[in-house]
Image 1: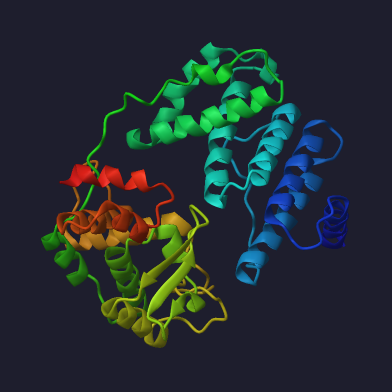
Image 2: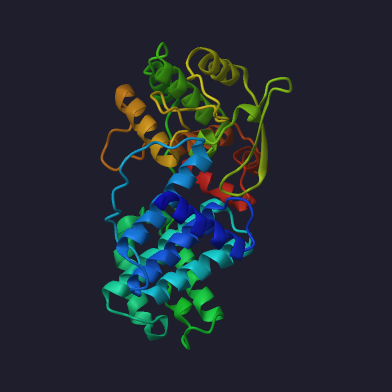
Length: 367
């Protein structure tokens, strides 16, 4: 009865927002508003927890076509508590969606803006109009502890985006975005790559007889030969492999830009071997699935990172302190190899699917 009551209320909420089909973003907004009602004393905690639970279940069914019955523990990570900040955060996410930002960009900016608002709550700031430049200056060293130094320029850019949104809504009389330091003086880092010898060790370390071994080997070779981002590898669907034309055709998760790559013979062979001899029997459209039930799509960057770390450890490469071990360094390695073969930068850029052609210039640091 409670499930029916909660889903009926969610259905009414969707109707009020002129949404006929399921929308994960609108469902999550519903949870945020339920949390605001809890903080205001309008509803009881059990009702908020029920609202959150039924949304989690629907999202799980929406993504995987099934629901795993389990106890959903409370999220003990910091979260927004003040209604004013919750609504401001929701308005900002709606603004990003209307601007046509990619899902990956929205996710990253959601996290940075939420961390800033959580910081303000910890400082007992009750309204965004109370914020001054010193709060932003104090926040930057704190957020730097949660990001790689090479990513801080992007992180600060996301924070600047949120502050400019606050300014555009006339929620402050100060130019808060000016408190973000310019990244023009940042140093150019040498991007991490692996050598040809390390590549051979990596390929030779994978156990290719097991189902998970066939999957990991196919993912590894795909990253090495095509330079696909890890998120695009886990999102790769059976229909994205065009066997007759020998191409891989996707819409990139980061940029929403179409990308067509040649299906190289060795890559096609290992993918076919996994599909025919290693992939679990499943109606899921995704190629790479969990090796154990429930057979679902791999969980994004984290799954790729764990697989990459495991393979690099078994191969005995990149085990020094601070060595990056994700699939992204394989993407870097492809770019470095193409550059060493004097491939023009625009061609490298098109292979890697960059939106901005200048993004490829960072790979000059590998020479």
